[in-house]
Length: 366
Image 1 (cartoon, one colour):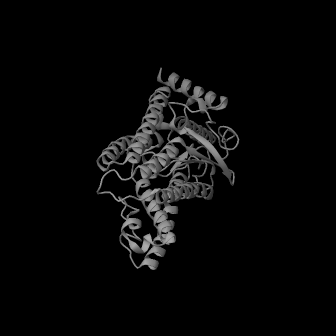
Image 2 (cartoon, rainbow, N blue to C red):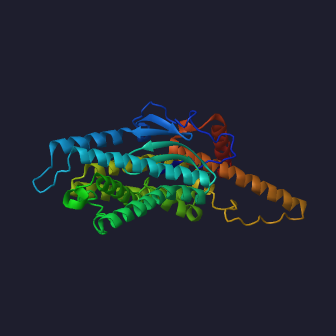
Image 3 (tube, one colour):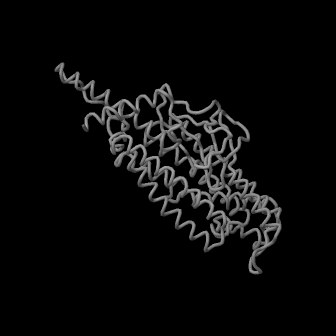
């Protein structure tokens, strides 16, 4: 997944947080699940963190492997195979998140942080206040999974001669060939390829669910942004995310999958925080945050702006309209930043601008 501020590349306050992309530091906050992490290393200007949920998940899976299967009908995988699967999961998630970062930079934005968590991770990207760039950034991660599945899956199919169930895994039991296929079980290389292919396929399917903040929810929000505006598109994605979280939690309970339940809870918390921040900004802006969603005057389609009117009064009016549009773009970026990082993330200039616009709107209403 990608987690974006969607601010402007030419804004003087574009860079957020501390140098190196550590926007929350190492101080966990109970109301912000994204801060429950610790830095691991840094590559190409991108700080890689690991989330507490990821560590807990790996430990739980290893302990379950040591304890053995839950029932007599379940085939044991063994600690070695589970450890191999966890290593494959870490690698796939890391590549997935670098896919978001590369796509964001390719689209003209910046990326400075990756948060590792089991089903897709979170990439801290600044793609700009542009729905197309945001869409490209969100699609970068799943694109990497598609490439991995095509390459590794094809390799498995050619090496084993078995496509359905091996090269194209069952997402409910992606590691099943390791236990039930003698050809795979006899080769460490094939077992490793099955782990990589199965984990990548599973992550691809889950991340494409239209559930915010998964990539599917991000893509949905970006697609609706130009028509509904930022606030309304985010609100729709959040509400869809609540429904998706409930369905995923129910499915996790039925399948006895702790990880699915944790992901559902994480998604629900994220949707709740985003919803409350949208309500806060809507109240602050007089209930008209949608007015600041930039759906016009962005020239995203590459079309040339209308020529200036020859009349001086009309030229002045056009200049004022452009100034108002630029201010609306800045306010929209601030609202997006509040929705993603909270009011505490605003600097003095952003707070001053937001206060000035809010006062002007209140005066107009009075």
